[in-house]
Image 1 (cartoon, rainbow, N blue to C red):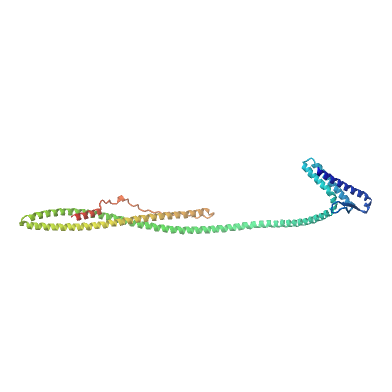
Image 2: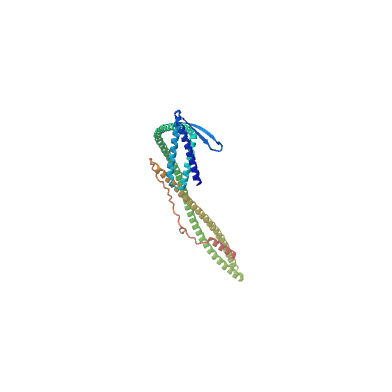
Length: 391
Protein backbone atom coordinates (compact mmCIF):
# COMPACT_ATOMS: atom_id res chain seq x y z
CA UNK A 1 0.00 0.00 0.00
CA UNK A 2 2.87 2.37 0.81
CA UNK A 3 4.41 1.73 -2.59
CA UNK A 4 1.09 2.44 -4.33
CA UNK A 5 0.77 5.72 -2.42
CA UNK A 6 4.34 6.67 -3.49
CA UNK A 7 3.47 5.85 -7.06
CA UNK A 8 0.28 7.88 -6.96
CA UNK A 9 2.20 10.74 -5.29
CA UNK A 10 4.83 10.76 -7.98
CA UNK A 11 2.07 10.59 -10.59
CA UNK A 12 0.41 13.63 -9.09
CA UNK A 13 3.68 15.51 -9.04
CA UNK A 14 4.23 14.64 -12.69
CA UNK A 15 0.71 15.85 -13.51
CA UNK A 16 1.30 19.09 -11.62
CA UNK A 17 4.59 19.62 -13.43
CA UNK A 18 2.86 18.88 -16.72
CA UNK A 19 0.10 21.36 -15.91
CA UNK A 20 2.73 23.95 -15.06
CA UNK A 21 4.47 23.29 -18.34
CA UNK A 22 1.13 23.57 -20.20
CA UNK A 23 0.36 26.83 -18.43
CA UNK A 24 3.74 28.16 -19.37
CA UNK A 25 3.07 27.01 -22.92
CA UNK A 26 -0.26 28.84 -22.95
CA UNK A 27 1.33 31.92 -21.51
CA UNK A 28 4.12 31.87 -24.02
CA UNK A 29 1.96 30.86 -26.96
CA UNK A 30 1.84 34.46 -28.00
CA UNK A 31 5.59 34.58 -27.99
CA UNK A 32 6.09 31.60 -30.38
CA UNK A 33 6.63 34.03 -33.19
CA UNK A 34 10.03 34.65 -31.75
CA UNK A 35 10.80 30.87 -32.14
CA UNK A 36 11.87 30.28 -28.55
CA UNK A 37 10.03 28.96 -25.47
CA UNK A 38 11.35 29.45 -21.99
CA UNK A 39 10.48 27.28 -19.05
CA UNK A 40 11.07 27.61 -15.35
CA UNK A 41 11.89 24.53 -13.32
CA UNK A 42 11.94 24.58 -9.54
CA UNK A 43 14.49 22.35 -7.90
CA UNK A 44 13.06 20.66 -4.83
CA UNK A 45 16.12 18.75 -3.59
CA UNK A 46 17.66 19.62 -0.24
CA UNK A 47 20.87 21.02 -1.68
CA UNK A 48 19.12 23.57 -3.91
CA UNK A 49 16.18 24.92 -1.94
CA UNK A 50 14.04 27.60 -3.61
CA UNK A 51 16.24 27.58 -6.65
CA UNK A 52 14.89 28.13 -10.12
CA UNK A 53 16.41 27.11 -13.42
CA UNK A 54 15.33 28.61 -16.71
CA UNK A 55 15.64 26.51 -19.89
CA UNK A 56 15.04 27.61 -23.44
CA UNK A 57 13.74 25.44 -26.30
CA UNK A 58 12.76 26.03 -29.82
CA UNK A 59 9.16 25.36 -30.71
CA UNK A 60 9.97 22.41 -32.95
CA UNK A 61 12.21 20.93 -30.36
CA UNK A 62 9.57 21.30 -27.71
CA UNK A 63 6.98 19.70 -29.94
CA UNK A 64 9.31 16.80 -30.64
CA UNK A 65 9.96 16.37 -26.94
CA UNK A 66 6.27 16.50 -26.13
CA UNK A 67 5.47 14.00 -28.87
CA UNK A 68 8.25 11.77 -27.60
CA UNK A 69 6.84 12.00 -24.08
CA UNK A 70 3.35 11.21 -25.36
CA UNK A 71 4.64 8.22 -27.31
CA UNK A 72 6.54 6.98 -24.28
CA UNK A 73 3.47 7.35 -22.11
CA UNK A 74 1.32 5.63 -24.73
CA UNK A 75 3.73 2.73 -25.01
CA UNK A 76 3.96 2.49 -21.24
CA UNK A 77 0.18 2.42 -20.97
CA UNK A 78 0.05 -0.30 -23.59
CA UNK A 79 2.69 -2.30 -21.78
CA UNK A 80 0.89 -1.80 -18.49
CA UNK A 81 -2.43 -2.89 -19.98
CA UNK A 82 -0.78 -5.86 -21.66
CA UNK A 83 1.03 -7.02 -18.55
CA UNK A 84 -1.84 -6.23 -16.20
CA UNK A 85 -3.33 -9.72 -16.42
CA UNK A 86 -0.06 -11.53 -15.55
CA UNK A 87 1.56 -12.34 -12.22
CA UNK A 88 1.44 -9.90 -9.33
CA UNK A 89 5.19 -9.64 -9.23
CA UNK A 90 5.28 -8.64 -12.88
CA UNK A 91 2.54 -6.07 -12.25
CA UNK A 92 4.51 -4.62 -9.40
CA UNK A 93 7.65 -4.40 -11.50
CA UNK A 94 5.77 -2.81 -14.40
CA UNK A 95 4.21 -0.28 -12.06
CA UNK A 96 7.62 0.53 -10.67
CA UNK A 97 8.96 0.94 -14.19
CA UNK A 98 6.07 3.14 -15.23
CA UNK A 99 6.47 5.26 -12.13
CA UNK A 100 10.18 5.56 -12.73
CA UNK A 101 9.54 6.50 -16.34
CA UNK A 102 7.01 9.06 -15.22
CA UNK A 103 9.58 10.47 -12.85
CA UNK A 104 12.15 10.66 -15.60
CA UNK A 105 9.86 12.38 -18.10
CA UNK A 106 10.79 15.77 -16.73
CA UNK A 107 14.42 14.74 -16.42
CA UNK A 108 14.45 13.78 -20.11
CA UNK A 109 14.29 17.40 -21.09
CA UNK A 110 17.16 18.11 -18.74
CA UNK A 111 19.22 15.27 -20.14
CA UNK A 112 18.81 16.15 -23.82
CA UNK A 113 22.30 17.51 -23.90
CA UNK A 114 23.59 14.18 -22.61
CA UNK A 115 21.46 12.36 -25.16
CA UNK A 116 22.84 14.51 -27.95
CA UNK A 117 26.35 13.79 -26.73
CA UNK A 118 25.53 10.13 -26.68
CA UNK A 119 24.05 10.39 -30.16
CA UNK A 120 27.22 12.09 -31.35
CA UNK A 121 29.23 9.33 -29.69
CA UNK A 122 27.01 6.75 -31.30
CA UNK A 123 27.47 8.43 -34.68
CA UNK A 124 31.19 8.47 -34.11
CA UNK A 125 31.21 4.81 -33.12
CA UNK A 126 28.94 4.05 -36.07
CA UNK A 127 31.36 5.79 -38.40
CA UNK A 128 34.23 3.88 -36.84
CA UNK A 129 32.35 0.59 -37.17
CA UNK A 130 31.50 1.43 -40.78
CA UNK A 131 35.15 2.22 -41.40
CA UNK A 132 36.07 -1.10 -39.86
CA UNK A 133 33.39 -2.79 -41.93
CA UNK A 134 34.81 -1.24 -45.09
CA UNK A 135 38.27 -2.42 -44.06
CA UNK A 136 36.88 -5.90 -43.44
CA UNK A 137 35.18 -5.76 -46.82
CA UNK A 138 38.49 -4.86 -48.43
CA UNK A 139 40.16 -7.67 -46.53
CA UNK A 140 37.42 -10.04 -47.68
CA UNK A 141 37.93 -8.97 -51.28
CA UNK A 142 41.69 -9.45 -50.98
CA UNK A 143 41.05 -12.83 -49.34
CA UNK A 144 38.77 -13.83 -52.23
CA UNK A 145 41.46 -12.79 -54.69
CA UNK A 146 44.03 -14.76 -52.71
CA UNK A 147 41.61 -17.69 -52.65
CA UNK A 148 41.37 -17.62 -56.42
CA UNK A 149 45.15 -17.46 -56.65
CA UNK A 150 45.40 -20.36 -54.22
CA UNK A 151 42.95 -22.37 -56.30
CA UNK A 152 45.11 -21.80 -59.33
CA UNK A 153 48.20 -22.72 -57.34
CA UNK A 154 46.49 -25.85 -56.02
CA UNK A 155 45.51 -26.92 -59.51
CA UNK A 156 49.04 -26.35 -60.76
CA UNK A 157 50.50 -28.04 -57.66
CA UNK A 158 48.22 -31.05 -58.20
CA UNK A 159 49.63 -31.48 -61.66
CA UNK A 160 53.14 -31.02 -60.27
CA UNK A 161 52.38 -33.47 -57.46
CA UNK A 162 51.17 -36.03 -59.95
CA UNK A 163 54.45 -35.70 -61.83
CA UNK A 164 56.37 -35.86 -58.55
CA UNK A 165 54.43 -38.96 -57.52
CA UNK A 166 55.21 -40.63 -60.83
CA UNK A 167 58.88 -39.75 -60.44
CA UNK A 168 58.85 -40.97 -56.84
CA UNK A 169 57.16 -44.19 -57.92
CA UNK A 170 59.83 -44.75 -60.53
CA UNK A 171 62.57 -44.10 -57.97
CA UNK A 172 60.96 -46.40 -55.42
CA UNK A 173 60.53 -49.11 -58.01
CA UNK A 174 64.16 -48.78 -59.07
CA UNK A 175 65.23 -48.90 -55.41
CA UNK A 176 63.02 -51.94 -54.91
CA UNK A 177 64.54 -53.69 -57.91
CA UNK A 178 68.04 -52.83 -56.68
CA UNK A 179 67.18 -54.16 -53.24
CA UNK A 180 65.76 -57.28 -54.85
CA UNK A 181 68.97 -57.82 -56.78
CA UNK A 182 71.04 -57.27 -53.64
CA UNK A 183 68.86 -59.72 -51.70
CA UNK A 184 69.09 -62.23 -54.51
CA UNK A 185 72.89 -61.92 -54.68
CA UNK A 186 73.08 -62.16 -50.90
CA UNK A 187 70.83 -65.20 -50.99
CA UNK A 188 72.97 -66.82 -53.66
CA UNK A 189 76.16 -66.12 -51.71
CA UNK A 190 74.67 -67.48 -48.51
CA UNK A 191 73.31 -70.46 -50.40
CA UNK A 192 76.74 -71.20 -51.86
CA UNK A 193 78.31 -70.88 -48.42
CA UNK A 194 75.70 -73.23 -47.00
CA UNK A 195 76.24 -75.70 -49.83
CA UNK A 196 80.00 -75.61 -49.31
CA UNK A 197 79.56 -76.11 -45.60
CA UNK A 198 77.11 -78.94 -46.23
CA UNK A 199 79.46 -80.63 -48.68
CA UNK A 200 82.31 -80.28 -46.21
CA UNK A 201 80.20 -81.81 -43.48
CA UNK A 202 79.11 -84.62 -45.80
CA UNK A 203 82.74 -85.37 -46.62
CA UNK A 204 83.57 -85.35 -42.93
CA UNK A 205 80.67 -87.72 -42.30
CA UNK A 206 81.85 -90.04 -45.08
CA UNK A 207 85.40 -90.02 -43.71
CA UNK A 208 84.12 -90.65 -40.20
CA UNK A 209 81.94 -93.45 -41.54
CA UNK A 210 84.91 -95.01 -43.31
CA UNK A 211 87.00 -94.76 -40.15
CA UNK A 212 84.13 -96.33 -38.22
CA UNK A 213 83.96 -99.21 -40.69
CA UNK A 214 87.75 -99.67 -40.46
CA UNK A 215 87.51 -99.57 -36.68
CA UNK A 216 84.67 -102.08 -36.68
CA UNK A 217 86.62 -104.46 -38.93
CA UNK A 218 89.62 -104.00 -36.63
CA UNK A 219 87.41 -104.78 -33.64
CA UNK A 220 86.06 -107.88 -35.39
CA UNK A 221 89.63 -108.97 -36.25
CA UNK A 222 90.75 -108.44 -32.68
CA UNK A 223 87.69 -110.30 -31.43
CA UNK A 224 88.62 -113.20 -33.70
CA UNK A 225 92.25 -113.03 -32.55
CA UNK A 226 91.14 -112.97 -28.91
CA UNK A 227 88.99 -116.02 -29.57
CA UNK A 228 91.96 -117.86 -31.07
CA UNK A 229 94.16 -116.88 -28.14
CA UNK A 230 91.46 -117.98 -25.76
CA UNK A 231 91.27 -121.36 -27.41
CA UNK A 232 95.09 -121.58 -27.37
CA UNK A 233 95.08 -120.78 -23.66
CA UNK A 234 92.48 -123.48 -23.09
CA UNK A 235 94.63 -126.02 -24.95
CA UNK A 236 97.70 -124.92 -22.97
CA UNK A 237 95.78 -125.31 -19.75
CA UNK A 238 94.67 -128.78 -20.77
CA UNK A 239 98.25 -129.69 -21.66
CA UNK A 240 99.45 -128.26 -18.35
CA UNK A 241 96.81 -130.27 -16.55
CA UNK A 242 98.01 -133.46 -18.27
CA UNK A 243 101.64 -132.63 -17.50
CA UNK A 244 100.69 -131.97 -13.89
CA UNK A 245 99.11 -135.39 -13.72
CA UNK A 246 102.21 -137.00 -15.27
CA UNK A 247 104.38 -135.10 -12.78
CA UNK A 248 102.32 -136.37 -9.90
CA UNK A 249 102.61 -139.95 -11.23
CA UNK A 250 106.38 -139.56 -11.65
CA UNK A 251 106.71 -138.22 -8.13
CA UNK A 252 104.77 -141.23 -6.85
CA UNK A 253 106.99 -143.56 -8.85
CA UNK A 254 110.14 -141.78 -7.60
CA UNK A 255 109.01 -142.12 -4.01
CA UNK A 256 108.31 -145.84 -4.63
CA UNK A 257 111.68 -146.38 -6.33
CA UNK A 258 113.57 -144.77 -3.44
CA UNK A 259 112.03 -147.27 -1.07
CA UNK A 260 113.30 -150.23 -3.16
CA UNK A 261 116.87 -151.55 -3.61
CA UNK A 262 119.80 -149.88 -5.26
CA UNK A 263 119.19 -151.81 -8.52
CA UNK A 264 116.40 -149.43 -9.22
CA UNK A 265 118.54 -146.30 -8.80
CA UNK A 266 118.91 -145.87 -12.51
CA UNK A 267 115.15 -146.02 -12.92
CA UNK A 268 114.60 -143.45 -10.17
CA UNK A 269 117.22 -141.20 -11.71
CA UNK A 270 115.39 -141.46 -15.02
CA UNK A 271 112.13 -140.65 -13.33
CA UNK A 272 113.65 -137.59 -11.68
CA UNK A 273 114.90 -136.37 -15.04
CA UNK A 274 111.44 -136.89 -16.52
CA UNK A 275 109.89 -135.02 -13.59
CA UNK A 276 112.36 -132.17 -14.04
CA UNK A 277 111.53 -131.95 -17.73
CA UNK A 278 107.84 -132.01 -16.87
CA UNK A 279 108.34 -129.21 -14.39
CA UNK A 280 110.24 -127.27 -17.02
CA UNK A 281 107.49 -127.80 -19.55
CA UNK A 282 104.84 -126.79 -17.00
CA UNK A 283 106.78 -123.64 -16.18
CA UNK A 284 107.17 -122.90 -19.88
CA UNK A 285 103.44 -123.40 -20.40
CA UNK A 286 102.69 -121.13 -17.44
CA UNK A 287 104.91 -118.45 -18.95
CA UNK A 288 103.23 -118.83 -22.32
CA UNK A 289 99.76 -118.73 -20.76
CA UNK A 290 100.72 -115.63 -18.79
CA UNK A 291 102.10 -113.99 -21.95
CA UNK A 292 98.99 -114.89 -23.93
CA UNK A 293 96.77 -113.57 -21.17
CA UNK A 294 98.70 -110.28 -21.28
CA UNK A 295 98.13 -110.19 -25.02
CA UNK A 296 94.44 -110.89 -24.51
CA UNK A 297 94.23 -108.17 -21.86
CA UNK A 298 96.00 -105.71 -24.14
CA UNK A 299 93.67 -106.60 -27.03
CA UNK A 300 90.62 -106.22 -24.81
CA UNK A 301 91.84 -102.77 -23.77
CA UNK A 302 92.41 -101.88 -27.42
CA UNK A 303 88.90 -103.09 -28.26
CA UNK A 304 87.46 -100.96 -25.48
CA UNK A 305 89.40 -97.95 -26.76
CA UNK A 306 88.20 -98.62 -30.29
CA UNK A 307 84.63 -98.91 -29.09
CA UNK A 308 84.98 -95.57 -27.32
CA UNK A 309 86.33 -94.08 -30.52
CA UNK A 310 83.41 -95.57 -32.45
CA UNK A 311 80.97 -94.01 -30.00
CA UNK A 312 82.75 -90.68 -30.32
CA UNK A 313 82.55 -90.95 -34.11
CA UNK A 314 78.86 -91.77 -33.86
CA UNK A 315 78.31 -88.69 -31.70
CA UNK A 316 80.36 -86.64 -34.15
CA UNK A 317 78.25 -87.94 -37.05
CA UNK A 318 75.05 -87.14 -35.16
CA UNK A 319 76.31 -83.60 -34.51
CA UNK A 320 77.20 -83.21 -38.17
CA UNK A 321 73.77 -84.44 -39.22
CA UNK A 322 72.13 -81.98 -36.83
CA UNK A 323 74.28 -79.22 -38.26
CA UNK A 324 73.28 -80.26 -41.78
CA UNK A 325 69.60 -80.18 -40.82
CA UNK A 326 70.14 -76.73 -39.29
CA UNK A 327 71.81 -75.53 -42.50
CA UNK A 328 68.93 -76.95 -44.52
CA UNK A 329 66.49 -75.02 -42.31
CA UNK A 330 68.49 -71.82 -42.86
CA UNK A 331 68.50 -72.49 -46.58
CA UNK A 332 64.76 -73.02 -46.54
CA UNK A 333 64.26 -69.81 -44.54
CA UNK A 334 66.34 -67.84 -47.04
CA UNK A 335 64.37 -69.39 -49.88
CA UNK A 336 61.09 -68.44 -48.19
CA UNK A 337 62.31 -64.85 -47.77
CA UNK A 338 63.29 -64.69 -51.41
CA UNK A 339 59.93 -66.16 -52.46
CA UNK A 340 58.14 -63.58 -50.31
CA UNK A 341 60.10 -60.74 -51.90
CA UNK A 342 59.43 -62.19 -55.33
CA UNK A 343 55.70 -62.42 -54.61
CA UNK A 344 55.61 -58.76 -53.55
CA UNK A 345 57.53 -57.68 -56.64
CA UNK A 346 55.04 -56.05 -59.03
CA UNK A 347 56.59 -56.76 -62.43
CA UNK A 348 59.77 -58.75 -62.65
CA UNK A 349 59.67 -62.45 -61.93
CA UNK A 350 62.90 -64.25 -61.17
CA UNK A 351 62.87 -67.99 -61.52
CA UNK A 352 64.46 -69.87 -58.66
CA UNK A 353 65.12 -73.51 -58.10
CA UNK A 354 65.33 -75.45 -54.89
CA UNK A 355 68.60 -77.18 -54.13
CA UNK A 356 68.18 -80.08 -51.74
CA UNK A 357 70.97 -81.58 -49.71
CA UNK A 358 70.90 -85.34 -49.25
CA UNK A 359 72.99 -87.59 -47.09
CA UNK A 360 72.99 -91.30 -47.96
CA UNK A 361 74.89 -92.94 -45.14
CA UNK A 362 75.11 -96.70 -44.68
CA UNK A 363 73.38 -97.92 -41.58
CA UNK A 364 75.49 -99.43 -38.88
CA UNK A 365 75.08 -103.09 -38.34
CA UNK A 366 73.36 -103.91 -35.06
CA UNK A 367 75.23 -105.38 -32.14
CA UNK A 368 73.97 -108.87 -32.95
CA UNK A 369 75.97 -108.83 -36.19
CA UNK A 370 79.19 -108.79 -34.21
CA UNK A 371 80.60 -112.11 -33.02
CA UNK A 372 79.39 -112.92 -29.56
CA UNK A 373 82.24 -113.41 -27.15
CA UNK A 374 81.57 -116.07 -24.58
CA UNK A 375 85.07 -116.00 -23.06
CA UNK A 376 86.12 -113.86 -20.15
CA UNK A 377 89.88 -113.32 -20.35
CA UNK A 378 90.11 -111.47 -17.07
CA UNK A 379 88.43 -114.32 -15.23
CA UNK A 380 90.84 -116.76 -16.86
CA UNK A 381 93.78 -114.63 -15.73
CA UNK A 382 92.41 -114.64 -12.21
CA UNK A 383 91.85 -118.41 -12.33
CA UNK A 384 95.36 -118.97 -13.62
CA UNK A 385 96.83 -116.76 -10.90
CA UNK A 386 94.87 -118.62 -8.22
CA UNK A 387 96.03 -121.97 -9.63
CA UNK A 388 99.66 -120.82 -9.55
CA UNK A 389 99.24 -119.62 -5.99
CA UNK A 390 97.74 -122.96 -4.91
CA UNK A 391 100.33 -125.02 -6.74
